[in-house]
Length: 119
Image (cartoon, rainbow, N blue to C red; front, side, top):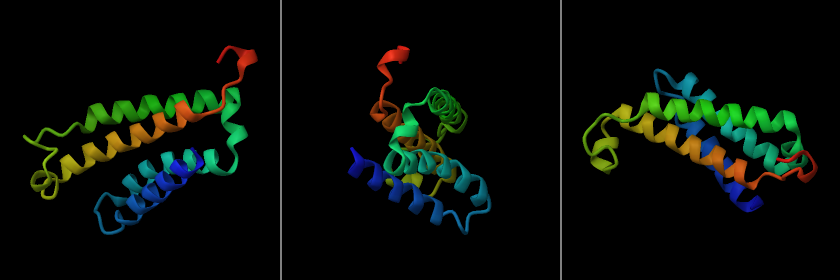
């Protein structure tokens, strides 16, 4: 799983890098930084993911990302087709939020479970 986390971390960092010239790039860099931070914790300090505090923080991030998917859901017809998302920024933003949510769920399902606390 560590290899998957490293790969996803590199993808999130690449997503952050391509936001440099975007008018709302700083906001999107921060959005992509959230799963990047969770992935870095999963790779370098995995034991922290087993704490109750991390459990609730990660759940909060997942809730916010799902809310972001709902808010940024692409309204362009055929938004999943390359010719649409290549041209329509709102389609790319919606897909970006979907990717953030999938990455956070990946960390959630791969986290260590503390059996004694019922998690």
